[in-house]
Image (cartoon, rainbow, N blue to C red; front, side):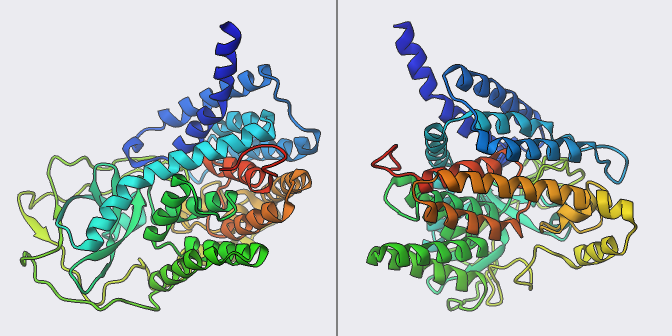
Length: 456
């Protein structure tokens, strides 16, 4: 009986680490505290020890890559921010240790569990989004965006329990419905789109299971350009590699969503007057609604002073007016990752002295001076050339090691190509969820199902 209990416990290690990694995505109901991040990190450390006891062992081919990443984490934790304080990134190390110890079969099981957890987190938002598209009357609360710059500019979420939609990004439909960008429980639609695309890549862009269906539909409803680009590339690659006609339908849907997100095509629009009868979306601003004060952002810099929800007219319920000029993009730029402030910062960085070039401006330069831009050049401005060498060197060495062990390296290579593209607009890949995807997705994508483990 004791042996049976131990064996069953070993089976829970991969799902447990998947849950710890998912927590680092910082769902909105955990905003305002960092305790869950610390607790997840400590739990990951325990999981690493238990996996080692269970017989999992690190691979020599990955030692240098993991060591460089650990050095990088320590290095950036020692770099001061603009105000002289520090961002302590040590909480990510236990997850990296667990991933280092995990054998490949456990890594594959981990990413399957992560797919289920992430897919279920999208389900409430998918249902609400479909209701909105159909024109059902839905009453939402009103929350300011987590990004302080966009919140100050008036950006807000529409919220029902378990669901966030971007209130500023809306496109009307001829029958009275509306398209909103789905955030699910996360801070932005891009998180939904990017993670969904990576998980689909891990499953070789086969939409068969309930989890992969949720990932695909949720990604579509995020109207994320990243999701559209990554999945169009992925489904196109699958079409070439497998010559499967069933790939054409999801490929076409991804193309259509990309064109909608970019504003190339628009459904017919209509005008409604405030409080007009008929289908619409109700936004209720309540004085008792919780405000977002000092939440943990994603990536995890502490953001203070988000504006509180305006509640001066709390008793009034109004229908959102969907205007013909409304759009699914929050800016006029297709590339909204590198803002003008960031362009100036990177130009100033390259004109700086030797010390700044080596160690960066400050560890939060892209946040303080770059308009909270999420672009790969922030590695230079925040951590310098030394940081970029450690970061890039680690990622390259780990990718090579994983590719060499893959049964089907072409699928693992496809994942790494998509991941490399995504780093441009989402470079903080040492967060537990992102690093878990980087290590485990190519394992599942490249495994020979008949030789080793199931990928269904």
